[in-house]
Image (cartoon, rainbow, N blue to C red; front, side):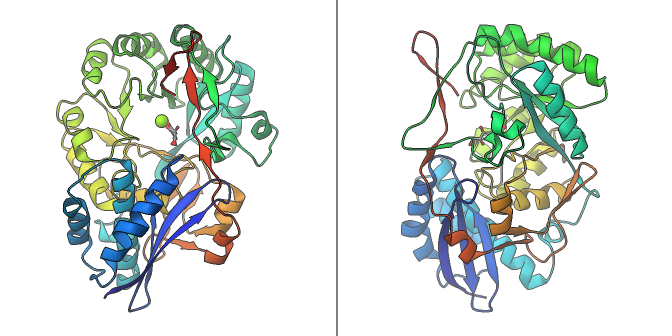
Length: 411
Ligand code: KDG
Ligand code: MG
């Protein structure tokens, strides 16, 4: 079965997505997600100029060989652009293999290890009242666990807080487009001390209102130093978090050693990691509890399955990154992996917008708080190419932070 056609499709229904569409001489179509939020067109160029010409004429069945060829033959390894491009090829080839075998991809990965995947949603509010409403809304949608992000008194904008339009039920929700459309990134403000003083009071209020059983998560979004993260983890211990995510900048993996020495709050990291070499030591030294790597930014289904199997040897579980900048194709890819592996932990699920769901028709389901990729052959996602064409790319950037003295800070 030969790869006969390869197209890179950019569409922006509720936000920008980059999709690789492969077609074989036997008529099978495979889709892969190559979306890199805020840097989309770099992956488009990598795919169009350097990958598509190499794919035409290859045997579509050779997934591992094609992955190794793209990874090793480039000489310049790793990095989000390269690995998102390779991820898209890997996913598209798994999609094609599933269709050729007439099986959903999870069956090819070993079959289902559970009936569904526990998902967490993004509850948020500028204050406790809004946050409580948001938690209740998520519970009504079926979520059995929630990530909690709130405003901090004295700060204007905070990562993960829904815009008023979302709270009013509007379509332009924060989580559809954390990257904002426009020629320049938006500037936000930040103060770690204020945040660290405020957050434990929020978790105390949430526990008092919702009781001990609701799994609660929090994303520190790379903003603390190691000792600050250690202190925050310790101060959150009474509230029994499911995890504290990205408590320090992800590129300094040694920082987790210090954090771990001081707190038993479970730690999750990995959404910006691209290969096993970013996370190998964190797993083998048991410095984390959840692996956050995403199919799209970690080179696809093949390496995602491998890293989760490696983590399983250390009783570390999966918690794949699932914001709306992972397209429905990338999301489906990690649902298939999550269903098949033994050490599934939790799946982030933000929910795409209406226009995105029209352009990407999905067979996955979300019932009683559990996700399932569905039983269509392959990944279970169809791309409406004409529909995608109605929404051209729009430049968008993630925001960035400055401290009160003007210093740039991690966002
Ligand atoms: O593109 C950046 C987003 O994917 C990121 O800000 C979302 O941290 C995130 C999360 O945990 O979903
Ligand atoms: Mg995160």
